[in-house]
Length: 294
Image (tube, rainbow, N blue to C red; front, side, top):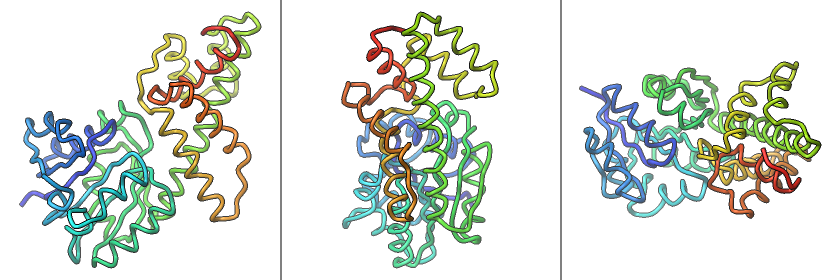
């Protein structure tokens, strides 16, 4: 008998993840707040659930992929929420970047239902999700991870496993704190060069020839040069991730002054109307501030 999966959240990352599970042979039931977004995958064979509870009920695995902790909470709670559909022995896997506080809270509530929880945040872009080339950090009890592992591997190129759900959520915040600092520093430096008359393409080439080269700078450098702001990962979500990192730091007693600055930069980009653009559009903000162009 094929494994039955409930999948909630068909946004930028969720839609390709759910489709990869379908292609891998799982029986997939989906739910999305805007039901029309499910039309494509339903036409390919998935079943549309009317409520989160229906999507979660009588499934071998339940996946959530939401934009933030508030969206996750809205799907979990209530008489028609996911938690209401779980029973003893069920497994909830959250692929959202919803932070350590949410992971801790969700884990407790799933346990109260007799179920098990895996935090499995995603590292990668929409293109990576479409090609099943993501890195997934999965944290939770060993036996639960074992049951979820084949489905997680169907959506990823690499699976990193931890014994604790909260630590998996923290690992994603650590990675995105690094990435946020990298892209903010890159955009700022490109604008510095452009303001002094340097050709931005030459700046990208020179950075890539240096000891500071990075696949991120190569990929995002090309986007910046082409002014391609199509969102693989939106600035508004990047700002949210920096906020979650600051919350984790406050809980753990860590200090993140650089992260605080990066978050402010991303917030400025959102306030400038760039929130739905790709993360690399932070460079466009710096170009604007420097009164120059890429």
